[in-house]
Image 1 (tube, rainbow, N blue to C red):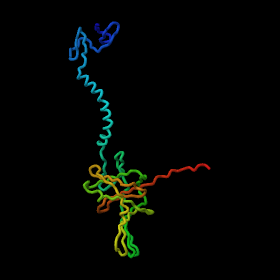
Image 2: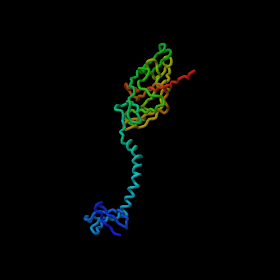
Image 3: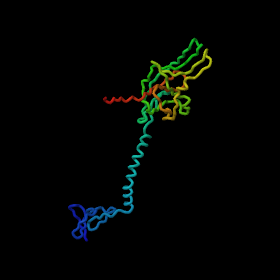
Image 4: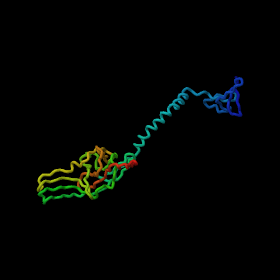
Length: 253
């Protein structure tokens, strides 16, 4: 069995009778670099070593694992790379879009403290906070999961002591938070705000904020959030609407 160089095709063929089998080869006159044997002006390519074969098999089997890992790890890396957006100013509340991380503003209001004295005080008195408008301009549908973010002076403060979440009563043109009720001639006092407290869970958010979520689903109505403190601290309001009834067509008679 002999070997011949087919110069027209630029490869070495091995003839065994009438069969011609192409082999991996190189033209003669190579520089004798490692991995080649030169015989009769023909450079024979030496077979790869065991180490090279193992490396080739390892690469062939490793790429599916690398591909799967890239799919599984990408969301976590993207989440870590996303910068947490926080409010710019202290004591301001925003609603959080959990899908994008963006903050949406709430309606900002100033509340006025009011007192109604009945029968010159002989029938007692009542006090409340009042906000303009019977409905907030910011609305959410019932059953939507709501998360709120507020910038605070320190995350070491217990949020339950400084953050308030209220439901509000409504009149024709105002929203009210009842505060207290005094007896005749100011004797005795009863708190009226406790039933309006909305229970919430708070956790640290970003470097300087808290995130609030209601512990229970909010029924339709008007709501407000605020930070406890001196001075005219703003209230941040929103409303929850009931589902829109689906119109039905009566069957033909």
